[in-house]
Image 1: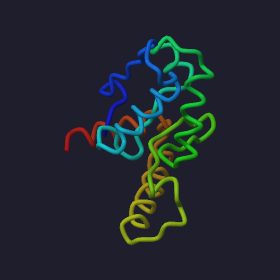
Image 2 (image 1 turned 60 degrees about the vertical axis):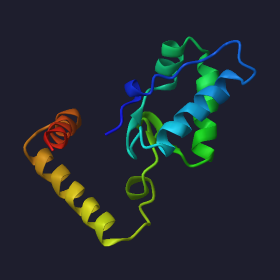
Image 3 (image 1 turned 30 degrees about the vertical axis):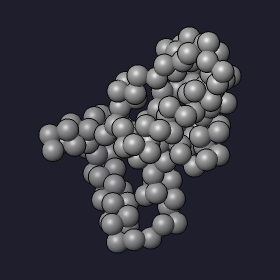
Length: 132
């Protein structure tokens, strides 16, 4: 999966382009170029603002515009993610999307029965994913 840390977002305070637009275009470019995969979790507004030395409202505006452009999807307190047709458009029906949703539901039921927390279950998936 793509990593936000691999983005190396930079803000040029002397540029004619507003900082929110610099954030917006850099994230949109990373998604378009495949450096950020669908489903990748983005940092919180506050975290990215702190990392870049910007006001939280600046990053929030960039995120709002990216969401309006359907590049990212915000799930309330659940976080902000690069938009995924399988996750963010549950009305999409294809055999692969449907099979993925069934597998995800089966996995959640299994790990809940075993008493695992959501973070533990996610780490297991990430570990398995990274092993290839």
